[in-house]
Image 1 (cartoon, rainbow, N blue to C red):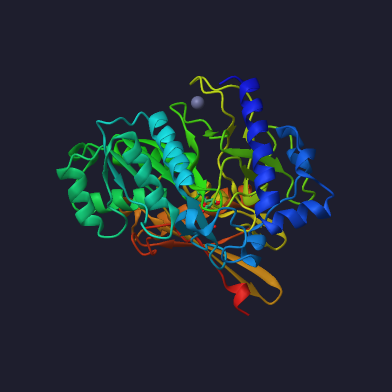
Image 2 (image 1 turned 30 degrees about the vertical axis):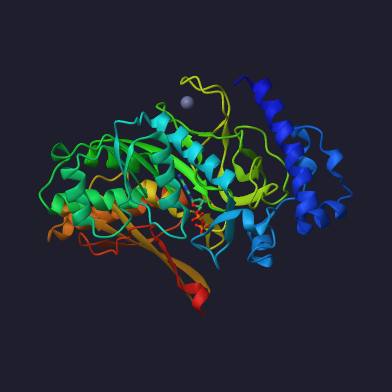
Amino acid sequence: MSRDEMHQLQSNRLRRLVSLVYHNVPFYRAKMQQLDLLPDDIRSIDDIVKLPFTTKQDLRDNYPFGLRAAAPADVIRVHASTGTTGSPTIVPYTRRDLSVWSEVVSRSLTAYGVTRDDVFSVSYGYGLFTGGLGAHYGVENLGATVIPASTGNTEKHLRLIHDLKITGIACTPSYALYLAETMAKLGMTKDDIYLRVGAFGAEPWTENMRHEIEERLGLKAYNIYGLSEIMGPGVSYECEGQNGSHINEDHFYPEIINPDTLQPQPVGTQGELVFTTLTKEGMPLLRYRTKDLCALQPGSCPCGRTSVRMGRIMGRSDDMLIIRGINVFPSQVESVILTMPELEPQYMLVVDRQGNLDTLQVQVEVRRDYFSDDMGRMLQMKKQLGERLKNVISINADIRLMEPNSIQRSEGKSKHVIDKRKLE
Ligand code: ADP
Ligand code: ZN
């Protein structure tokens, strides 16, 4: 679709959406009235900047169904966000919402090169979390064979991966690494399995982690991004270029704003990602603030798709640690760890306060081949990591080199921070 056609489509859809929420959602009608806005004031997608924002707090204040726009009988499924950062938010879907969702996941899979001939394991958790069922119906809709493995029982899962000649997998990047570790433990290598493509998301990951996963599982690793408030996985996806994720912008209109001033940012500038659900019926949202920090990428994509791309999520604005006044994202620490081949990408940041001073301890696992009794060697490794970290985050961290397999693994979203300061 040309950019002009997309602009027209988005404009038509936005007008319909604004009229829908104005008439069906008292919360939005009140917000628009406060801004002296009538539905007719929104004529094209460019007018979106006039509309009010929606925050996670708004969803909580209207718990459970205050923002629902559809009749209760038209809601055929409900999901809830995992509540990484607080109490869950409830998301109702109509039949049409579910069909759009399957479609956008199928588009993502198609971009990864998945076809009807693939056998695809969905290893996101099934349940209220959108990852499992969201990916599941996208795979089915495409016509590939879905294996609803969910999480847990990793050894049995690996056996299925081998015996059923599974070619594709969807899971969190941290679970992909855990699979690789379990494979090694069982004496399996990537040559024993048939995996060729992975759809990884639900948590931030880095380019180094991609290489690591691709190398250890013998597949191409693609990003898939989404959030339950907007839909679930499939809001955006990487193409074969593996350079930015194409946004399904005919359904989810993206903006980048400065989280402090709330002003729209030009393409290419980092800021908070904001989405408007152009076609959603169950719980349509205007300018939902995701808290995810990233940039939209300028320029067209060599793959030929004309949809706008977003860069990697650099963190969540509420995930950011402030240590001695310095902003630190766990992803920054992770990318430094991944530059050292001696270390596993398994780490935990422990933040504490001694007296008035914040402290940062970085616990990280050393790879089995490098873990030794040679104090000199270990000290050297510690020093090197400390210096590299200092260069990136400007903080002297207390480094703890840990034995292989000593840090708790996760099957879903991984946890990387223990902030003891909040417990006081
Ligand atoms: P929550 O974690 O807030 O309870 P969700 O389970 O819906 O809600 O998770 C959505 C969030 O997960 C996104 O806002 C984003 O922070 C993170 N996320 C999802 N996919 C990706 C991805 N591919 N890369 C980085 N972060 C992601
Ligand atoms: Zn592309």
